Length: 467
Image 1 (cartoon, rainbow, N blue to C red):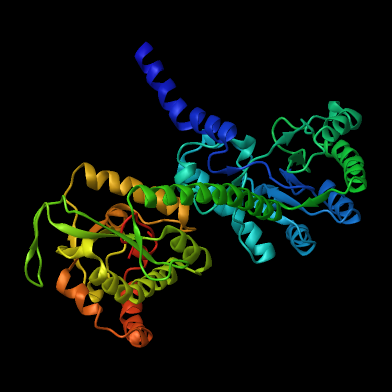
Image 2: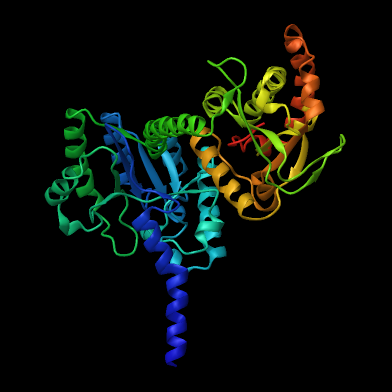
């Protein structure tokens, strides 16, 4: 019996208690507070109420305040006109289950039906389905995270116990004024017909809310719906992230300068806007047979390429998409290869090189430039390269990734590129006046290749070739 009790406790904790604790404490998969300067979001649960909700709408209209109403489906049945008025006056409607019952007490399928049934009521009245959901008492179960992925769960940052009439409007008003702060998501109730609530408690809420709106308006606050609050918060977070990201990029590029000095990298072409750097070094990989003839063996001299990461960062920042960034990078590579060939021909240190060498995330299309593509042998170098390139992508680009499974593993997998010495020498015969003409011919093939490899183009950046 004791074991049965313990197993029941474990299951209950996993199903209900832990998800609720995580979402409320850490905000996992929920929105509960904004990051704004002068905005407050008013949200109302349990309605609509035929008596108090119309009074509330009148009050909000007087102060030009927008709100979010989390609808109990069974309360909304037969009140289609009231729901339409909410929408027409610019408020947002959300779902609060069909009956006010905790998700802990329902199976996942039942929760889903509750939401769908409430959304049917909202859609029949307004013509739209809501994508915003507040579970009763803010309680979620472990399956809600997976089953409700199409919905944004909204919790709150301030709750006042306004469902109890004995609280009184004066005490309620004092509590609310303490939360007269930007970013607050206020939880109030426009209906007292749920279990544990007092039927006429909303009358206190209306009195206290008017004082709150009056004081907030005087201080310059705006009362916005949850949609606007989330948009403003996302913009603020992006700006904050941008400041930090710029600082990180600046530090990273300082490290680049140090790296170039330490390893004596030579710039290819225009020193003010270079796409490449290179150094002459010893090849330490496995022996490789080249399709063009010959082989590269451990100990051979190679020209190791390094894409300029400042260039990469500027390309990514001004490109509309990862595919566009990839296309621009390949064009930079194509235009730089004749310069590279001419410099290698004039570099006495490069007279014995067997190939041009590098490691890259974007390998499709590189064969059209004359590179041969090889998988990196599994080992410490391959693993460390993956880690480094992931960091580089995160630091230097604006790319977001959503690929999964094998597709993601393939995309994150770097490749070794080798261009035989005779191939790179052939580029030195190209007249500089013909580079643009060649680039135009190549771009069509590059674009076809990258369109078929959009996910790979999303994984920009490399410490070596970065093609």
